[in-house]
Length: 94
Image (cartoon, rainbow, N blue to C red):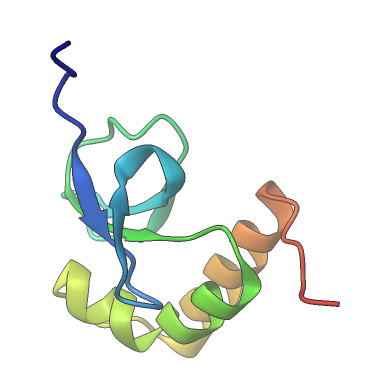
């Protein structure tokens, strides 16, 4: 039986290559801001990260800025981290 193509992406935090559907997309739209792309369809350069605290902490701000080819201020990084943790119930290791 033939299976369909599964797009793979690399997590900016842990650098693991996994199916795109398991990751969150962060996008830099043409106007230059940095946003979380819930639908995965906004135009602009994208970066992907697992919805876990360790990957988010490792990716923001340096790896995300490198993937998006832009600079991220401390305020933008703080806002992005808060937004990611707010949108998704991040399960911390217990």
